[in-house]
Length: 364
Image 1: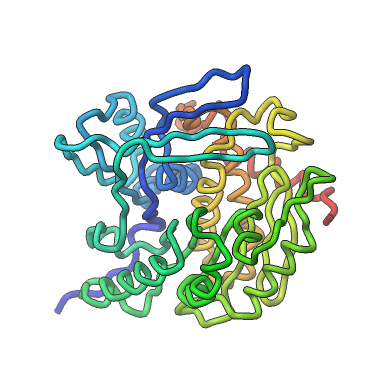
Image 2: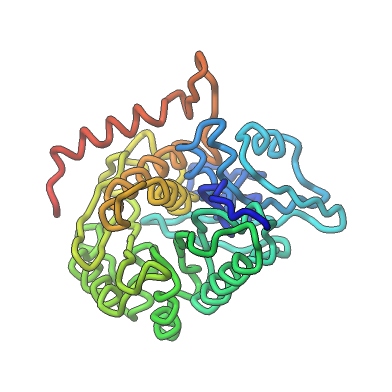
């Protein structure tokens, strides 16, 4: 008889790996061959809080084509994660073009064919993960979660009673009013839904920006979230037990469940633009990194409920995102007397500093 195994992996993302070209507003010059993609940044967020040997509990997939750069291969190796690199010399690596304009507006397009990931992409070690990060349309979300559940049922070594946490990031181009009904259906399949504030508004056919104050329309964000909460969010933990986490760029994030809601600030304080903090260089991937950090805190919550752990998880997410935006591409990992540092800072020190700063934070 095959023994039922507990989870060995805390986190697995089904986001893609992409090599990015990025264009900024003048006078900043464009950059090329940057390690990126939603999956890469989500893996970074989880990895920041997972020094070795825990780093092996972070799972992701990289599709490497004939043009795959050696320096990127080395960075992936240095992270020491459970990364599956699938080699295919018959194709080019997925590449993307990013352009940033005023007020953090982002334009994106693929420069080479993309390879989407789903449950069929995962080996047994990854299908057994404690949490999954998805970035996809509402309909694909339902299909992938259903596929993950079926694959786990078919794998005799996975205890069917151990349900994974599902963190869903709706794909931006399908955050539209016409997809709202599909989104409502998908809410029953996930534990956390996390659009940014603009994507949230697009689902409801409204603008959640506040142009006059160069901020977000917080009451409208809260109203849209209440609608989803009332519809019921939650997978195997029960409909209604889930949460909404709205990422609002320099305005922080809003977290909500049936019994609590609150705003949290960013780690790097900014005023009217991303250039107002000298630490903020490039916002690419901040939201994905946020969700990687959030997910690993939620699955490591021990006896806490998701609702009880949500604020701490959002704090982890905010700290993770702070490392992603301090440079173009990935933060630099170094070792100092056995301690990991990212951009010269220990993650636990930044987490401590951020928590201390929240003591004086006033809800807007």
